[in-house]
Length: 284
Figure 1 (cartoon, rainbow, N blue to C red):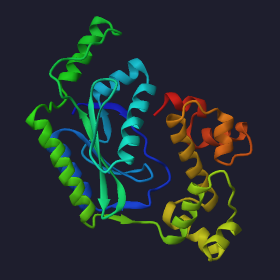
Figure 2: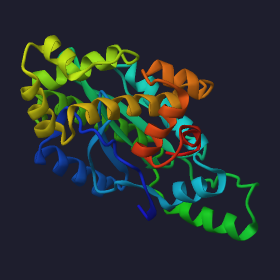
Figure 3: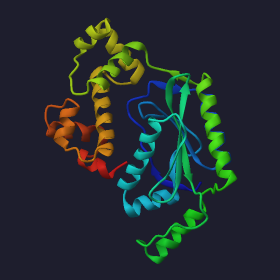
Figure 4: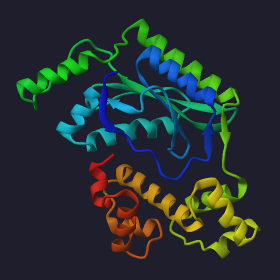
């Protein structure tokens, strides 16, 4: 797959899961042989490992530069939302004509995350690019034709392979917890009660351990202080809401995630993400 210079940004707060070298090697081998983008996304939306390609294709990057990121962002979110509610493989054509898919990874009845794959075409015909000049249309057509093609039986077998890989990942011991019960209990409470505040002493009462233990565990397991990790989690949740619920105002977002006012929320969001919340609807 031809490389695009635009790289997707990983979530800042580490996942509660970690992937073994075996899973990483598996995804690298599969993506190399199939020439597709392949990654594992945990239940909180963190990409914890990926195959050979951690970037979007040249074709996708070109479309983003011409048409902007919002349509791509919404298309990705549609796929992930459907996949999060399903136990079956979900397939999706993005707004630019590429095919993407996601397969839930389960361990018995416990959902571990999604095996996501894509950046391939199912049609030999080049999509119409009426909004481009002749020279840009030619460049985009060339990038389109360079993408891997899966059609007919080859497409069916790709889907079957992804199903089998997802089953194997769920059954094998290659996705492991990296956060202990204290940190996980605190972060789970914040996810359930995002509008509420939690002080360090509140966290100590909630978990039954000392404040010094909480401080040490957060630094060790996340690389953040307790307060930094809690704020980063809320910013990540707000970031997801920007794309899932674009009609929400900045004031409504600030109230939903427990910030004093919209101006303060905007300052915190910009400090963590490098752009203002209202710009997040055009970023990815």
